[in-house]
Image 1 (cartoon, rainbow, N blue to C red):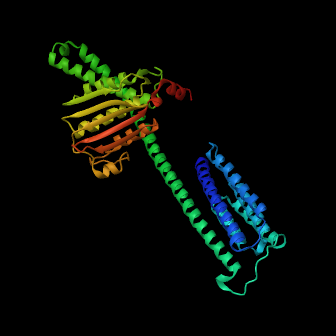
Image 2: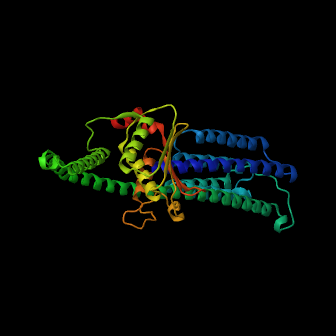
Image 3: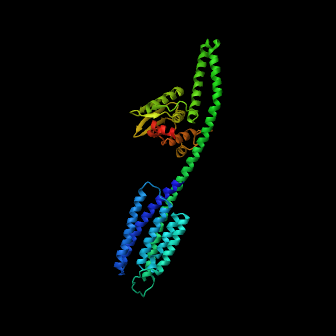
Length: 430
């Protein structure tokens, strides 16, 4: 939350910088108009020095904004205090409290009320009030020509009107920009809350999967012992058809045990083998061969266009989500499935195409959300939900679209750095 507030403060500092540039331009125009057009003598050198100070302050503030450090509430408070000080000096040089622009103090207080914490707002209000009172006594009076007329022909009335228009215009500009910053912050917070809820959901699913894997270990081990006993019995060994079926059962049982082991490894239960290092081509070629051997799709086109191989760490979770993508695609398109592996800069890109009916518009609009599926069955949509979240954890993205020629395309993009042996080693050490 503090980092979000710091980011918002940094945006608000940039708004103050923009407002100060407008204030500088406004002061230059006003001073020249009063001195040249109205013929009212002003201490131009002193007032120009204040404007130079504001320009220098803005340059320093801009350098501060471009730094990587966070901006605190105290810094914003000091920025506004310096603006108040500059305004006070200008008013002191041009008639003090009798100057219609004295009401620009209200603009400073309103800006502070939007940007600052409570203690800073009250402090700013107290300081501007003291400055106002002081200017009623201490100021350099200016000679204003006597005027008989009233209404807008009166110089003071004109000054009040200009002050009103200037303050109102700056407030509209400032408040709209602040509102935009606040909306962006609220949107970001909502996205973080949604992401946190999704990650909590994944944690619960992971706990259930890990618990189920533990529970399945015992019956699988029992079945393995029974199958071994049956395969040694002469009555089963001599019957070729039964022996073949027992061998198939053994194969499927070994696969179940491998799946359970993979679940436990993904949840951190089994780390005895250490980190398994491999390469991009070896990893993806191997998982494609493994999936094809177990699923036996009618037609499977696989193209590895990655190029020069790169060392990575074998990730069982990544392997499972790729299997998930393949399973979804072959379910939608049993006759044909196309997979392409390529490299784009420092990204591993895996494209999975099918010749099925494509995604419904509602599914695409809510792609990656839990239980977002057109299959109308319990648990539908959890596969893609897990795919999106696992890839997001690795710093990648998953996108989906319907092809113009028919079918659907799901593209998985992963940064190589997320799977590099160095990154994995640091993560394990952490």
